[in-house]
Length: 315
Figure 1 (tube, rainbow, N blue to C red):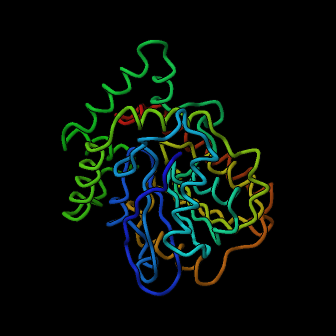
Figure 2: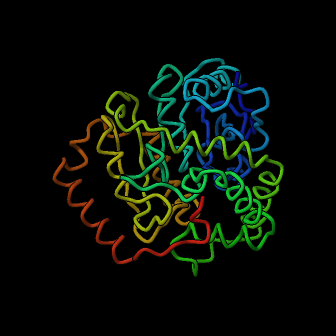
């Protein structure tokens, strides 16, 4: 049995209820710096991904199964919020988990906010380098652990990997606070067990919710960085196309970390979504024709960027 994740409280004030789930090879402490301002005015908590410290997989049945992961998060929400529905904010892999929760436990979810998210472990036929390494016979797991431990071994290695997630590295989003936060994230990863993270990556690469998106009834805000090198923007747009109630916002000159690269803009988007309500129909986005035009623009943008491989691409 997979026990429920431990919590990191960001705020315990009365008000809106929010759960934040980070991306792969990050940690709940990431949200200490980058959580949207409005969620700090209510009751908000950050949960780790399975296998990411402090959520150990000790005693869990391997390989990981989607029902067990969904049930563990559901029990955590019931524990921390008394079963009241919450807004889920999921970044990257945290977005996949949020969509699965909205699909299978809609009674616990009022809204979903996605940033740099994906709906399957392989984006339009692509697969993350980490998953490809793990699929190698015999040496896959050994190579994964070697690459992972080397990446987090020093502050500088981890910093450069993080910088590759942003589009414009010349923009000084790094401050003493953000640098300190990323070092906390690295320290948390150093406390994780690479074998357990590998188990989670294997689950992720074999999981998809694309075919079930139309069954998700809760409102969704999907924030896309047009220059995201980690999760193709076209995949993120296709994700929106499968949802029934979605508001999609594409941010130019922004990569995989919208909450860091365009913090004030993202704060306003999320505040408006939570305070005034989401769009209730995909038609109000401009319809299928408008989405196709946007997709074409994103494809052109990705082509201009080329096929650059980032230092953190294996993750």
